[in-house]
Amino acid sequence: MEQVEQAVTTVNNIFTTYDLPLDALGATALALIYGQPLAAYNQEFGGYVGLSVLETNKLRITQKPSDATNTTVVRPNTDTVYALAVMDLTSQDLVLTIPPMQSDRFYLFSLYDPYGDNFASLGSVNASKPGEYLITPSLGSGAGGLMDSGDCPSYMGCVTSPTFEGTLLIRVELKRNATEDLDVISDFLNQVQLKSINSRTTSYAPLTPSQLELLSPDGNTRALQLTARLFARNPPETSAFRYVIEPILQAAGINIDTADYVQPANVDLTEAGTMYGKALLSWLGNSSDVAPLNNGWTVVAPSISGTFENGMDLVSRAAIATAGYLQNEPSQAVYPMAPERTYTLQEGEAYILTFVGGKPPILPIGFWSLTIYNAQGFLIANPQGTYALGDRSNLTYPDGSLIYPSGNNDKDSLPVDSRPFQLLVQSSDIQPPQNWTSNWLPSPADGSEFELTLRFFGPTSELVYDLAGAYQYPTFQKVSALRS
Image (cartoon, rainbow, N blue to C red; front, side, top):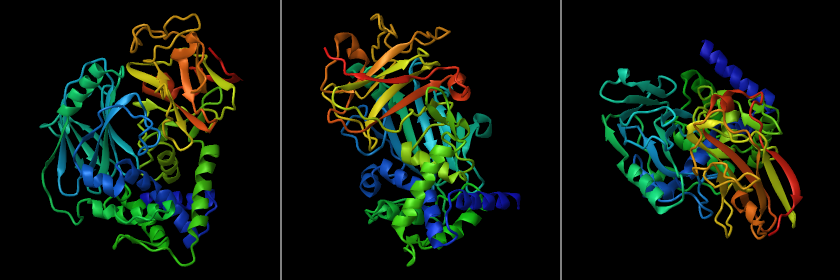
């Protein structure tokens, strides 16, 4: 009874906080909040066409880091090489084999449900041992997670998934974008195995491309269609929340039994979409879940970073799915948000970012980067082929000395060097002086809007939990462009 009351309170709070009417229109807006992450899920593997090629429970390995030609996943990072599998546990369990990896290279096996909840992580930060890991659905018993080998003695560990479907995303650090480094990563990823085991019969059919076919080109309709088609196999983590959310989805025109969506006659989808958008903006501007850092930077609170209170924090997970689907739990990565969502530079202008706190305090195995995207969240083509700067970019101090003399990963000398350094964000068609070239992040030559995303992989506890601001984040100064 207590779980049901909590679920009812959660839903009532969403209607009240975001001023949604208690009718089919309000139910549709809430259904969009609930189901929008499924649109990101569908997009990240290419929907019907992508799944036809990839299939379920098979790894797709990228052979190089993301570049400006990649317009499938928003805000990809260029620091890693990816491998991805769409997991389907409806009729079998999976065994994931992790091969050995050199001790100084960051790697991460992240497991997500379709809503973007990072329910388990394996990799270098956790000191996960190489070997076989069993992946099995919780079958309605609640949240997923990682159990040690004592719970499954035949394996290095067991992972339970809260849903039948999900994503396995592998990230392996790219130290230098050179052939020999890519060969090391390729060799590692080619040894990763994902195989089926323990066949079983359930009342649900496996995921097939046809279930993702003939989706509407309208984003709101598509999210509702995907909710109708995928909800039954991927319900809320608690039965109490399912009991509460199902009638709301039905009022929005979603028939869970037939997996169909029919727009209610009295509902304006554009108006419902506007309500959804206002809810996300309100959350971003007012939520206590967005914590202030310093110098205008903010961060999603660790308590909901990559996880969403047993699937009941609907607005947070919708906002994060929109801004950066498949966020990691904070022990693995931290994503501070810049003071402004977007930036622009007029002709002849530039930004200087001063890292007043010096080197970011990350673990010896970790790395960091600042990446530039266009307003749609995609990498920006530029003649320099530079999309990000970080600890592997040959950055220099103002006196010309290298910030990371070994090139990368010289982070195990504590305390971390706190000398300030600067990065230049300037149009790709204005060449800066030679002493700035290694610290130059090219911005759009046409003066269009851009975004800046800071990432810390393998953060120290100082970055994760000391939100009062022990580490001083970069300041922004708009200046005249620096010319050679």
